[in-house]
Amino acid sequence: MKISATIITFNEEANISDACKSVAWADEIVVVDSGSTDQTRKIAEACGARVISNAWPGFAAQKQFAVEQTVHEWIFSLDADERVSDKLRASITKLSERPESELADGYRIPRRSYYQGRWIKGGGWYPDWQLRLFRKSVGHWEPRHIHESVKMNAASRVEKLSGDILHYSVKDSAHHHRMIGERYAPLAAQQMFEAGRQTSPLRIASAAPAAFIQSYFLKGGFRDGLAGLSIASFAAHHAFLKQLMLWEKQKAENSRQ
Image (cartoon, rainbow, N blue to C red):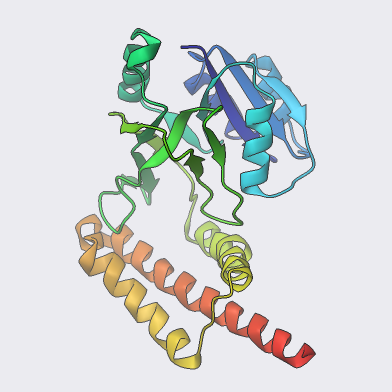
């Protein structure tokens, strides 16, 4: 079981060293960089990664490009703000010792996020299963603007691994707010618009309270104290904003007809 670890980057000098170190056990590390202006490339190369430049085509497309540059059949995909826990590394090591015939085609891994000084348990943020270890001959990154994921061929067998991917994505509340306003909501609205989804003033008005109730109460966000309240509030903001942006796209489209 030879594994290629892939990481995509843009100005990740604060993260790339720890990301590369957490997959140092892989047989190959491929970093695909989309024009960083900081020391990302230099740091990655110093960590032993093979660094390739590629203009930014979108999250899923860039991750698939990284897969296509690898040497080995097995892919482990990691984001620059993620780390492999010791338990997960041990699980992958055990897999690599098994005969190829006993292996599944892909493995889902739980992801745990660190937010406001604590590991989050509720709000729909955990276990947040991610299919990150897979055979590239039967799996690929599905083209999506946001919440990209690996899609396996119909006959593929997918199992679960123990041990977490550790996620350090949000620095502070200002960063969280920017992520929603500048990335997640616009991309989600674009994705819905291209899929032919429609919204309405009633849906826009109900999106935020529905998202808050789901995150804070139904998915146990209240267990995480102030962090859980913050996550639910930002989930409400995201839900409202993406519906409003979809409405704006609909209005613009109608005005052109």
